[in-house]
Amino acid sequence: MGLFIAMLLLTAACGGSDNQTETIQPTTASTSSPGEKLFTAAGCAACHGLAGEGSAIAPGLAGHTGAQVVRQVRAPLGMMPVFSPSQVSNEELRQIAEYIEGLSGDHLHMVMDDTGQASAQHHWMTLFALEAGSNEEAVHHIDHIIGLVAGQHMAQMEEAKKEIEAGNLHEGTHIIENMLAGVEVDDLTPSEMHASLARSSALIDDAAGALHHLDHIAPDLSDHLT
Image (cartoon, rainbow, N blue to C red; front, side, top):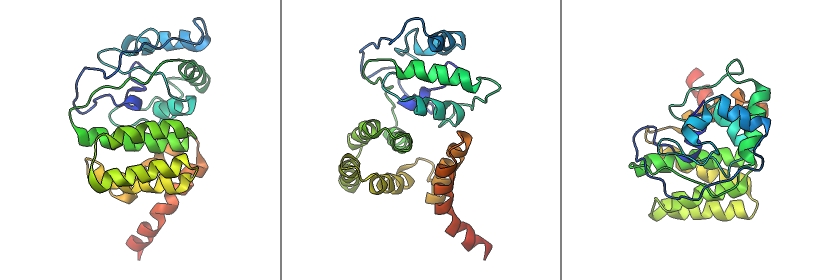
């Protein structure tokens, strides 16, 4: 459980540095909440720090929504394993997510040596932030992408940021999705990307989100069946 939010802030799962780009230490909204006790009891604090401030092996957790926490526990990115309700109950997860959402302080990120890997993960997290209704968080990750890319890719990210800030979430989301398929280190196809997002949505009981992504896959599936 100590690493269950690591990919939220770009832990270098496939190789990276132990250095953090920021050092502001978050504080908790409550020092005795049930969620804080569960956070410690489940072993999360062993890697993420007693107050979720991060450590040399795991990032800080401030600045993320409860919905993002739930998604990352039930449908994690990268190498992190899924934590099922038999391991962390829905009620326990709700309380942990509530505690993490109450942390204050700036984002803390782990530095990744592979800029392509970092860019891909920021694309994923932008999409997850948008699905969680956290537009500010999405823009935060887009800003990181802009700092990693150049040329047409940068122009597309600036356009996506503009659309999201203007409230045109559908347009902004599709720009991010299209670019993700081109930067994913494993040469992810658009269908594979939507399949991953559909699975992620299904694991957190987001039926509408899963159906949305399956609709994107349907034409490719029809082509293979005919």
